[in-house]
Length: 88
Image (cartoon, rainbow, N blue to C red; front, top):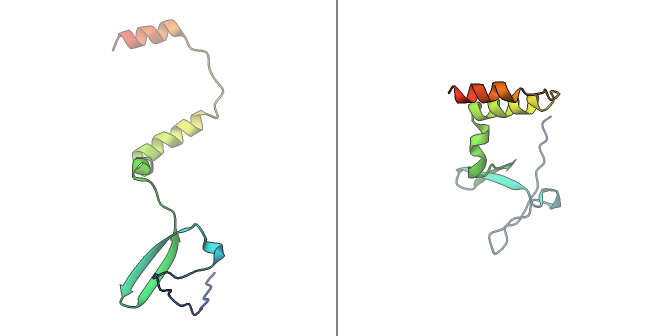
């Protein structure tokens, strides 16, 4: 769906422009492909400390963990676990 709305806005003395209340609090990307031209896109950002979650290996591990949460719990043989851990 392509929506092409055009409006005339005036940049205030402080260099700000209002895009409307529907965008209040949103993060946007502002691209200036040439002087006097701005392309504004709404965006979501990822904190640097959470970028690792979006790497393929981490995402796959998280997907497996989430899938495991749907499985019913199983009884654990603690003697077998201890034997397995001690053989490492």
